[in-house]
Amino acid sequence: MPDPLSDVLRSVRLTGGVFFEATFTAPWCVAARVGLEDVRPFLANLVQVIGYHVVLEGRMLVGLDGAPATEVHAGEIVLFPRNDIHTMASAAGVVPVSAADLIQQSPEGGVMKIRYGGGREPTGIVCGFLGTQDAFNPLLATLPRMLRLDISKAASRDWIETSVRFAAAELVRGRLASSEVMSRLSEVLLVEAVREYTSTLGDREQGWLKGLTDPNIGRALALIHGDIAAPWSADILAKEVALSRSAFMDRFAQLIGMPPIRYLTVWRLEIAKRHLRESRMSVPQIAAAVGYESEEGFRRAFRREFEMWPAEWRDH
Image (tube, rainbow, N blue to C red; front, side):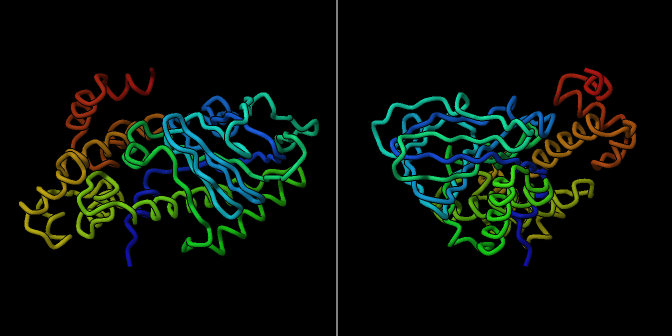
């Protein structure tokens, strides 16, 4: 059975998963945030970053400004889709220190570590990040500030647990787990966390995620992202998802916030930007790759959207 969520996540190319490891002992409290500058030595050209923490041992309170603290236990993962500054603590009321000031660089060039606290009950975590090079990412724009995932409830529980244990073992040895494993783990963690979150959305709530969970609109999104260069039209998409044209147009705009062909155009041009940045493809080749029949039509659309010609954007 098609899984629109996994399909769309794969199409927007979320990568990452470089970890550092921390052991805290009560009482303790740190303020943390994974910045773009922190991850660029590992993955360059990222535009947006999600930080996350896997709790391997103990428990902690996680807080964001303006929101009540959330208790997270061993076997749970907390993700920050907006990459907000957050606190992690053994208990309420402990004064936070900056996690960045506590990171210890390995003299052998191995994994960064934190050892901090008052010597009582331990909490062990591994920290990672998930990044994207896409400036327009409807998934990240519509997620809450924090997501919590209970691995025991995840559909991919066994694989996640095995991969987290592998990553932790590599950290103990002073090595980073392979980027392929970590990138796949990061993707699965986000898919599972988003899946768990969408199950809590009410029937009257709207937005891109709600559209993704809608059987008809979710299928349309998966089709668009699965083959961005296909000659999609509202009529073809409506037929593919078994809706009348008017019903499809109304429901897509209601849930996603824009008409389907506008959504298609935005994504085509975002992918074109990626080709311009990463590849040596010519402008006509890129135009064809993202579904434009003529180079001139592509160039005009690109200029309308970004206020510069494709060649100018590549060189800027």
